[in-house]
Length: 438
Image (cartoon, rainbow, N blue to C red):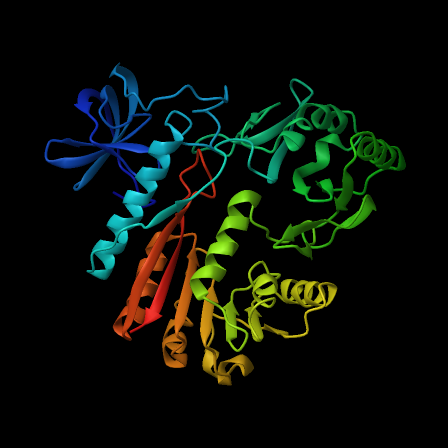
C-alpha cells in the first residue's frame, strides 16, 4: 500500500500501543490497523508484534515509530550502517532485500490498479547488489565553531542538521574509502568555514570530486586539494558558484552503455546505480522491439542515456530535453560514437508541445523518462502520434498512474510492468511500463 503524506501534520500526545504489522509499504513503513484506521509504523516489518509510539493521528490514518520489537520477523536483518535510523539517506536497511523489492512491487501494482481501474501486476523486478551500488553522492559540509571541527555527511531524518559520517555502505567502495581522508583534507583548508558541499562521482574512467566553495580559494588551499586529487587518483573540479565548474586535474568523466562511451559534465544527471541502469536500458530497448526502419522519439532524453544506444538499432532517433546543456552533451556523444541518425531538440516539454518542431514528425515508437512531475504536458500529443509502442520510465508512481490514463483511454494496452530497484535500502520507487497499440 502506498501512502503519501500532507505537509500539514497534527502531532498528538505521545501514546504507546501494541500492534501486529500486516504489510510493508513502498517507503519501508510497517502497516497495521488501529481503532479502525491505517497505522504506518517506521522500523517495523510484516508479521512483527511491536510497541509503537504514536506520533501523528489524523482522520483516516495515524503514524508511529516502533519502540520495541516483541516478535521479530525472519525478514529482519541487521543494518550495515551504524547511522541507520539517524541519517535520512536510508529507510529500509532493517529489511531483507527480498522483502524490500516485493513490497515496492506490491505497492506499485496496488497504485496502478487503483488509479487506472484495471487490474495490474508487476511482471518483473530489475535489481542488482543491495549495497555498494551508488556511484554518486552529494555530502553537506558544516563547520562547527564551538568544537572547531568540520562535519561532512547527509541530513538527519526530518532535519536540516548533518550526520557526520566516515563510511557509507551503499556507496561504491572506491567512493566510500575517500570519505575519511577527504574530510581530513577539507578540515585542513583555510576556507574550511566557507565550504558548501562536496560531490563524489565514480565515472568509468575513475572517481571525481566537485567542491562547492563560497569564497575564492587561496593558492595554498588549491595546492592542498590538487595534491589530494593526485594522491587518491581522482579528478578535481572546483565550483565557485552553482552553475560553473573549473576542472583542475584528471580526465573528463564518462561511462559505458552498450559498448558506447557517454561523456558527462560532473554536474549532469546520471543514474546513480550503474548496474541497474545498464539492465534498464537493455530492457527498454527490448520492449520497444526496435527495427532498422523505425523512427524513435525519446522525450526527457537528458544527455542520451537511452537515445544513444537506441540509435545503434533504430533508423532514426529524435531526442527532446528541456535543459540546453544536456542536449548539447547528447549531440556531442552522438558524434563521439559516430552516430549520424540522431537529432536533439532543446524544448520545454511542459509548454504547448504541438508548436515545437519535433512534434510535426511521425514516430513508430516512443520512450519517455520524465522527472517526478511526470509528463502531463506531452501525453495527449503522444496519443495523437499513435506510435506502436510506448515505454514510460518513472521515478514517481503517482504521476505514472495519472499519465497512463491518457494512453489507456486512447486504446493502448498496458503490456508489461517492471519495478526498478534503483535505490536499495531507500524508499525510492522507480518503475518502467510498456504500452502497445491495440
